Amino acid sequence: MPRKIWVSTIAFHGTSKPTVEENLKAAHHLLEAACAVQPDIVCLPEVFASVGTEYEGVEEVAQPVPGPITDMAAEVARHHSTCVICPLMEARDGRVYNSAVLIDRQGHIAGIYEKIHPVTSSSDYTVLEHGVTPGKEAKVFETDFGRLGILICFDINWPQEWAELKRQGAEVVFWPSAYNGGFPLQVYAFLHNYYVVSSTHGDSRIIDLTGEILEQTGRASPVVSAQIDLEKGLFHGDFNWAQLEPLRARYGRDVAVGIYHDEALMTIESHRQDLTVAQIIEEMGLELLPDYLARNEQAQDGLREGRKPTPQHPPYLGRQQYLGESANERMGE
Image (cartoon, rainbow, N blue to C red; front, side):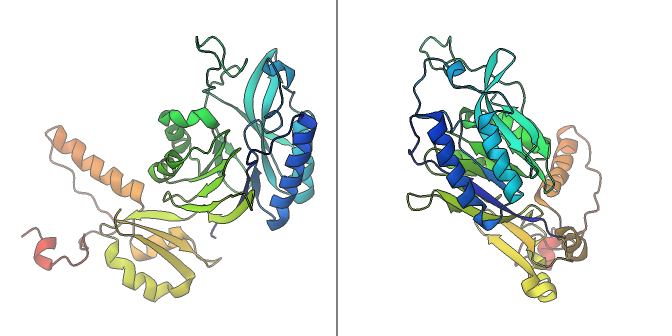
């Protein structure tokens, strides 16, 4: 069945308070507003509780996990049966990490990501974020609705971390941050074919796996939500365009097809509980974009090494590759 979930994200829009306690109160209010749509997961901005407070070193505002900051988020998670991503300055083993804590629907700690790339806070690069210790690895977390990754703020500048989350099977990546991030978030979503959800102190966004912005916060709405389908498939147009009319004739409104002419791509999403994208792929002889690219790489590698490529047998064998292609063009004449 389709795996449609609701995600909500929060923006502080420069409304941070002078104390941790006041920030927690503001965050609790925004979490309650986000939970009005009964989301499966909500994300808070980077270190939301300590932003706007005055401190010399992060140890002054760091808290353990569990602690007062995560306790607040856990109470909301339990009450609304939603997952919450709760970023904070975390005190652990005599160090401070810029962390994002994943809290499950029961209010339990399901995992912690430590920011791998904290930014320098001194011109000689001897101190990072007023005393933060860098984390070691990008990781993917299993939830009851799918696989998610988390990266934080300055991590946006290291493409390898975003690629690593894709390699581990992330279906949606959450990015709590101090700033908006802008276009690179759309690029990562498009390149890795996963959803990206930002939660910032400016504007927060929910970005489709095609790189399109689905929802964005603004001054009138610091909370936005959207339904996303983790089973939604992305396809190259090659060999698949020919199936558009038969696909529409077979499924009608039960299947949503998105066409991206400039990119030569298409998406398929099922609206029927008993119909999966995997079934559609099998019934219509389609192939997902990563699989199509992998077939091309196999052929390229053979020729590069001086070997004749081994014939492959895709589900569209013998089908026209491009729209409007003639029979002679299909035969290579």
